[in-house]
Image (cartoon, rainbow, N blue to C red; front, side, top):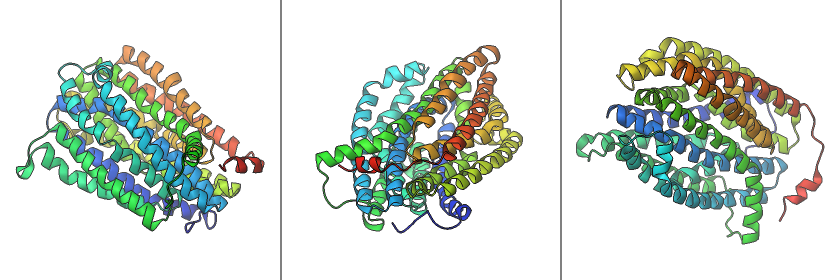
Length: 455
C-alpha cells in the first residue's frame, strides 16, 4: 500500500515506472542477445536450432506472462480499492497457481518434443540439436514461470525498480555463464547448446529466490497463513478470469511465429536463422515500448480500481504518442544500420540478407505495434481481457498468417515480412479506436461485483 499511483502528475509517474523497466527489459534482451551471439558462433545449424525453439520458449513464456498479467490486474485493483488482505491472498495464490501450471506444461512438453519440432519444420540435421537444448530448458521451466508471476505482483504495488534489479542479476549471471558453458572458456566443459540451456536455468533460479524474498520480506505481499482449498480456488478463479485470456492472447503470437517459422523453413535454414537474428535485434529496439506496456498495467489497474478515470485517459493518450514517436525513430535507425547489426551475429551472407530484409521492412509498423501492446495491457489491467484476445486473433490468424502464406509463395521471405508490417498497421489503428471508446464511456459502479470477489 506504500506506492499509490492514484495521486500526483500522471506523466512523471509513468516515467518513474517505465525507466526502471527499460533497464530490466534491456537486461533480459541482453540475456537473449548474448545467447544468440555465442550460439551463432557455433554455426548456422546451431543458430537455426535455437530459432526453432523460439516459438515454444515464447509460448511457455507467454503462459507465465498471462498468469502474471492476471495476478497483477487483480492485485493492482485491490490496492486501488484499499484492501490489503485481498492483496496478500491474491499474491500468495498466484504463486501456487503458477507452480501447478508448470507441472502440467513440463509434462506435456517432454512428451511431445519430437513431433512438435518436426511439425515446425526441424529436419533430421537440426532436431538432435533442438532436443539437446529443450530437454534441459523444460526441466528449468519452474524457474521461468514462478519468478515472472512474482515480479508481476511486485510491479502491481508500483515498484518497478526491484523487478528490474532482479532481471539484471539474472542477465549478468547468464552473460557470465554463456561463454564458459557454450564455448568451454577458462577450462569449463564445451557444452554448446546444452550449455546455453544450463546457463539459462541457473540464472532463472536466482530470480526465483530473489522474487520470493522480496515478496515476503520487503513488500509484505505474501500471506503467512497457508490458504485452504476453498480460498485457493476462488483466488485462482479471479486471477484466471484475466490471466487465461491474457495467456491465450500472449500465446497466440509465438504459436503464430511457429507457423511463420515453418513458412520460412521452406526457403532453407538460412531464412530461419536470419529471421531469428532479426527478431533478437527487434526485441532490443522495442525495449522502451515493452517497458512502457509492462509498467502502465499497474498504473491503469490502481486508478481503475480507485475510479480515477481521467487519469487513465491521460496516461493512455501520452503512452500512445510515445509509441508513435519512438516507432518512427526506431524505423529510421534500423533501416540505416540493419546490415552491420546482422553481421554481429552471423557472417553467412544468406542469413544477413534475410535479416536485412526484415529490419528494412517490419520496423515501419513499430509505432502501431506499440499502440497494440499498450492497449492490450490497459484492457487487461481494467479486468477486460476480451478486446485484447480478439485483437490478437485478428492480427495473427485473420491477417498475418494468411497474408504471410500468400507473400511467401509470391515473394519469398520478404513477402512474409510485408505481411507482418501490414497486420501491425491495421490492428494498431483498431486498437487505438477500441481503447479510446472504452475509456471514454465512464463505467457504472458495480457494488455487487465487489461482493462477488469475496469467498
